[in-house]
Image (tube, rainbow, N blue to C red; front, side, top):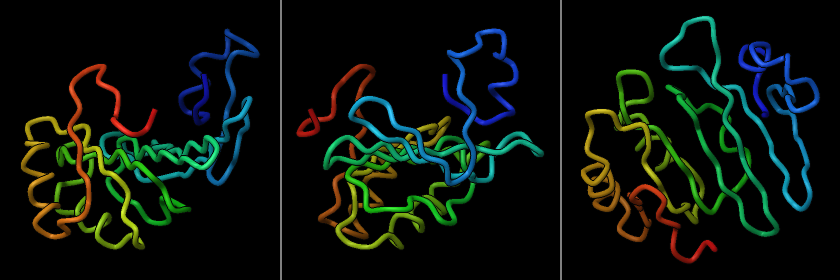
Length: 149
């Protein structure tokens, strides 16, 4: 398990199977590297969210976690970005859209997540209206992202 000290402290009994990482820290495992960024958590005040960029060869995946703001993330150009749109405990769809539209081109494939009562399909439609060339995917449980094998 990899996480911030607020999470890994609860799992310390597992010893070496737990690794604590912080803002800006990187971790390498086999042919992959992980870079972590501290973002504001949407639900629990006093706790922070740990976003991650996963680099596997030339492919990069970024996961924002339960963030409500995205300042400084992602730190590099990514191929796929998983971004929360729920609004109640995470960023609102508007805030997520603003973040995406401020990324440098080429924009990544977007995967909306943590949508709670929001429509991920509606979010993708709004994104497509703003930037028709951007892919926005709402996979079903267990469905692999095509082209990213």
